[in-house]
Each structure stands twice: as structure tokens, then as C-alpha cells.
Amino acid sequence: MATATANAEKNLANARELFDGFLKSTFNKKGEGWLSKRLDEVCSLINGRAYKKEELLNLGKYPVLRVGNLFTNEHWYHSDLELDYDKYCDNGDLLYAWSASFGPRIWAGKKVIYHYHIWKVLPDPAIIDKQFLFHLLAWDVDEIKQAHGTGATMMHISKGSMEGRIVPIPPLKNQHQIVEQFEKLKRETQRLEVIYQQKLVALEQLKKSILHQAFTGKLN
Image (cartoon, rainbow, N blue to C red; front, side):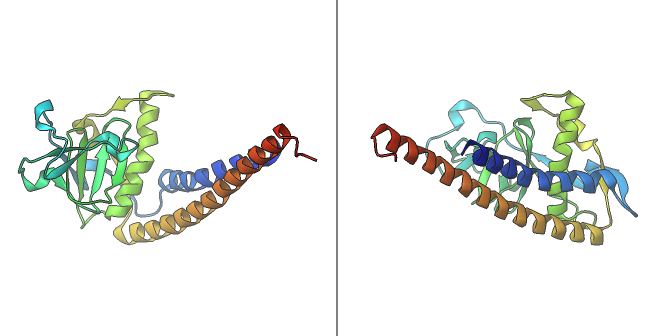
């Protein structure tokens, strides 16, 4: 059983690495017609709003999206403040958490106010596809980590530093093709993850059942 569990865990890890590996090879290899551009040539980064403690409410008109809410924190603060339109994000907006646990996210939720430690990323549609930019920023996270040194965690990156990053940009037509490839591989990777995760759950349940039978004297 230990061998079966180890194999399932290995297969699960391999499934996750499959997509990451394809992402890295695409941007590291590049291709014909690709250009190197500063990030601020292809998109704009909009600062979120810094909040005073007394402005954060337990209940209010608008949820306040903080970095933790993008990851594991399910506790939300709210606000009744009416702000400029660019301080809100809506379903489908591209965001970037730049402090502590950082990286890009596509917001999937209702209208919220995004906090200071998050940028809203506005791509120039004449130059870059939003989904392609999301994958590009996801790839660039590892590049940033390497620049900070192996094993660096809980980092932050300044807006000016981020805007000045040199990134590889293919023609728009190629971007759409790459996104289609990414999405197909992502779906297949997620399908494999579900299969291997189910196997791990089944093996754990079998292990508990055998132990229970052993302790109750029912194991033949």
C-alpha cells in the first residue's frame, strides 16, 4: 500500500509539473517574430487602495479583496466608501499580488475593492491578449524568485521594478494559438490531478479500514 500511495503521489506531482514545464519551455524557447518589451509597454498596473484600520468593516457595501483572500484566507473585510472606478475589480479582471505570496490571478467573483498590495493589470489589446499576459506573468514569477535568490519567500516587488521587467512578446496571432494550447493542456492536467487525488483518497480510506479491522480483531 505504501508503494501504491507513493506512486499516486508521484503521478500527481508529475501531472502538475507537466503544465509548468510546458509554460517554461514556451517562454524560454520563444519563436520567430517574438520581441522583447518592457512590461509597461504592453500593459498598465493600477495600484489598489491603502486602508486605515478603522475603514475596514465587518459588514459593508463592498468586499475588500486582500492578498490573503486570493489564496487561503476566507475572512473578508468590507467598505462603504465610494471610490474611483479604477479601484474596483470585476469578474474576469487580471490582478497581481505583489507582496508576500505573489503572482497573477484572474478574479472570478463579484465587484470588489482591491487592496493596496494588489495591482489591477490592464493589457493593451492591440499588443497583448489578457489570457496570454496571465500565463506570461505566471511564468515570470519563477524568474523573479530566481533573481531574489534560491528559496526566497515572502518577497515583494515594487511597481517600478515590475513595470521595467523585460518580457518576451509574440505576435497577437501566435498569442491566441499559445493560449489555446495552454488551456487544452491545463484541462488535461486538471483531469489527471482529479484521478490521482481520488486514488490517494481511496488508498487512505483503505488504510484506515485495514487498521480499524486490525484493532477490532476482524482482520483475517
